[in-house]
Length: 414
Image (cartoon, rainbow, N blue to C red; front, side):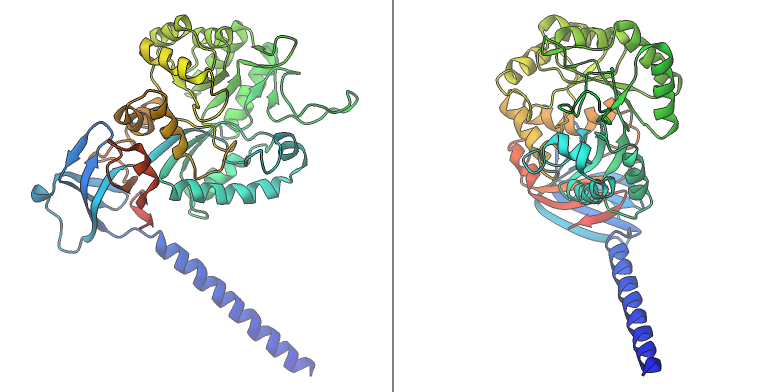
């Protein structure tokens, strides 16, 4: 009896392993690149302008040729993907994401940071990354793990190694805040509660923290130049000298700095310190936006979240000053995969559809120092491409109608 049970157990185990292996193989095949694809849409938005009657030839992970369909020579073995009435365009770029957060309507931020297990948060993030990719966003800049340590570095590696599907990731790891300014809050003062970002102050502490985050995998350093603390509501945190130190330390390693800043003074200090992007900017003034333009600092306005009463005037002032606008949504506050709502908000608040699409493709690529890899439909760049039904240069909501997602020449959705 024991022998028969052992044989049965062995057989079931073998079947389970075989079934699992088959599932993995099937999953890998879905994302496996064909040697050559010929993509034939109705039109191409190349990251700058619309091109009617163009097609794109992809070989391996890169774009081999782009141009009028009747002039494009494709090899006989090319796999042709017909995309009638569709617009082919660069994969969208999300410049402000939090893949380790989920909507606060599901679980308050304090509880996500202080009560949810790290393994649970990583499991959720795996789904978040898949949903983001399938929504047409093939690259994200993830700006802080919000208490999840360096989990973003591991998730980035999992995507790179094709363990999980997801967008290309630039990660900021833990983010940096001044002592006493961040959260979770509301605990008895005798308890030293771990924070949703890393606390650092002064020369020694900031030096150690910036270098440590870079050493552990940060592609960007994020600092909170102001926050809701003290008696003044939102107020500046780091001094100008501290922010200059952060930028100098990061720049030595070739790492750019992003600053959370909503107040004019926080934005002014961050701009003078040399950060490359300011996140949110809710109370930005014409004067501070002119300073940002002068210093070449981009604004990531996160228009779909935050104080909706202030956002329209803020983005109007930024546009009038000529500030570069990076498309970033702060997704995580709302559901991952719904990133398109930021582009819809940009149009609703006064940006043209073509400006908005550029922000989410070629402009974001430049802001993230990736313009030689992504952000345009151009020969030699990575084949990060999506196709949407209709023409998003006339109706921005077309970006929700995804017909094709390709990243690095691999088809993830068709």
